[in-house]
View 1: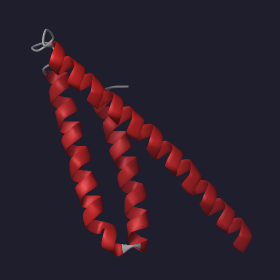
View 2 (view 1 turned 90 degrees about the horizontal axis):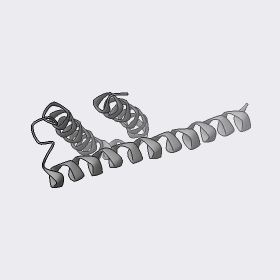
View 3 (view 1 turned 45 degrees about the vertical axis):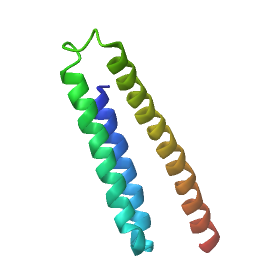
View 4 (view 1 turned 60 degrees about the vertical axis):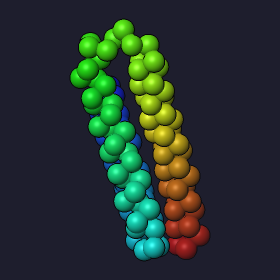
Amino acid sequence: MELSSAVNLITAKIVFVLENEASLLTEVGAEINEIKLELNAIKAFLDDADRSSRVVASNETYNQWVASIRDIAYEVEDVVDEFMYHFNKQQLQQATMEG
């Protein structure tokens, strides 16, 4: 999977979850927009890194920084997946208790 595709997937998951929760708590709307902007900035950075990887391949500091950002993006995806699992599990338990 291309890195920008993974970041797009992560962003979509986070936005989906946060927007659903935000409908319950309207005061978090500004925070959600801030998170969305930061995730878009990370995506833009990684897109640029993918396009310029041939140019700066010899810059070890840059390469390490890009690798760190990629690792963080994958860790965020794992956290979002785990959150979604627990969120859906809780929703199912509530529905079972109500029905």
